[in-house]
Length: 105
Image 1 (spheres, rainbow, N blue to C red):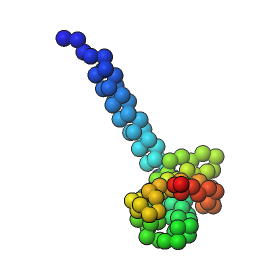
Image 2: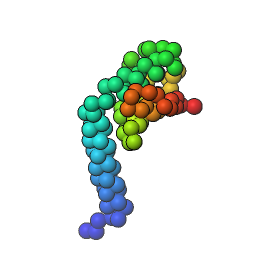
Image 3: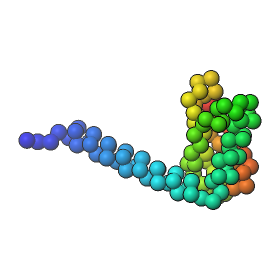
Image 4: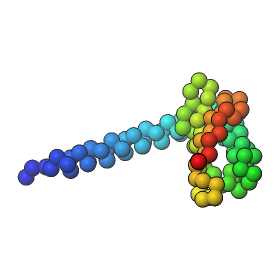
């Protein structure tokens, strides 16, 4: 019995996606262990509360570090409140200074 090429491609894609997801998960976990992460997370939460004028969204949001390069953190805040959008991208310096704030359009 021959193994269909399309099935082999689909299984390979699933396997590669699983490996990529695991790599991203481990990268985020290593960023969470960084000594600066609590300060960056707090700065991001305060900025979301200040800009949105509502602490409910910022308090319930999930803050995930995605990258830390050249003393700049890329943080994604996400929550399920449709009136405010579900994702905000934030760039913050190592000092906690907010460099960029990008809510959904």
